Length: 402
Ligand code: NDP
Image 1 (cartoon, helix red, strand yellow):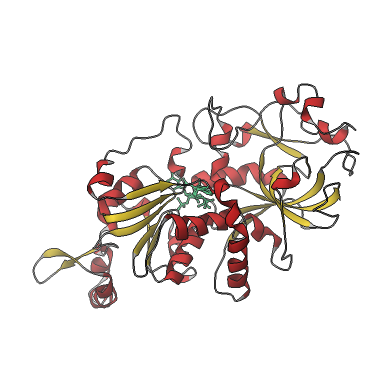
Image 2 (image 1 turned 30 degrees about the horizontal axis):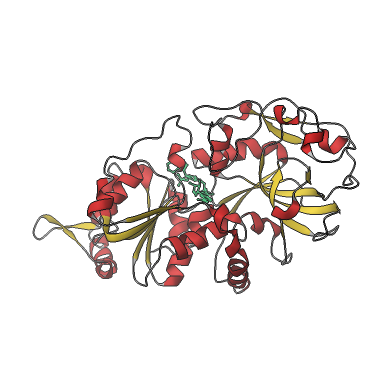
């Protein structure tokens, strides 16, 4: 079984009908002789927002390759005994391949010396039950199979590395700084927030439901969190101001005064509670996951010499033309460093990252939440759910547990 993209999607949210589950005949569970390939039984697949841009045809893609949509030819390479050089497979480029993404698999057969039958690996694999990987150099061996294997498409995989590199390297944090994370209850956001807290920062997250806001405050230890969908004015929402009933005006508070004020006003009713906001002195670090109006609101609230790690802009991925950001001059006037990064450039940091985060997991010093969907046939709906905020935590698809 495989999941294919039927056709390119120029604009709009992806739909289940844009993808199809196909079943092809039996396959040989052996790598072809003379190849340097690895055959995997796929266990867990990752749904990631960057997969949406891959569903649109780009003339010039410097980020990741577009998927190859079309008819059902993808299993060709598994079914036929051919040398697995694609040049030997007639027209394969013009035909389809399954959707690909990060995943965890078990090695069924290998002629690549670094992996043996029975090993677990993670890396780019197909949305299919078995994947023949002809360039296994890109796969990582899983050294800690005692940790849930699905973590290797999340906290111990590309997602965790993104949070690690993005926060520690791109944000250049200092203890005590004020950090804001958008899409904070998702895969990357939940980890960034915890790294920032462990580093000694004040951390606020935004998310799209009350359930997620509660998780941020109770499970992941954010200092504050808010539901951005309930805020009519994001720029104002990011400032922390309270109404001073004595003088009849709004006053800004410092982070130290927050606890005191909250309890004082909560005695007087929820009204005062609702007037509190999050960054009276501005934001030092913004971990950007969504773009659009949130980025505009953040720029308005950034402090001089603040830093923005531009990790992703999910609010833009379904648009044919990205929205403009109107207040970019603030980057100049506030001397902000805004730096985009793509994690594929940083896999060299993986061993250092893995050692640290495995330790944190074993010592239960980091929390991690997955949203697990069973069955390859449910993978399209799970991927679509990312763009509707349906996932609570890292979206994982189970193809097989063994
Ligand atoms: P998440 O697990 O956070 O899932 C996506 C979440 O984004 C949804 O749950 C939803 O949460 C939120 N969202 C969806 N649509 C919108 C919208 N229109 N406006 C605001 N929020 C929206 O995904 P990841 O943690 O995997 O990815 C987060 C970001 O990091 C993405 O932008 C992604 O592209 C980027 N990324 C970048 C990498 C890099 O190398 N630079 C690597 C990995 C990820 P909610 O309910 O809160 O709205």
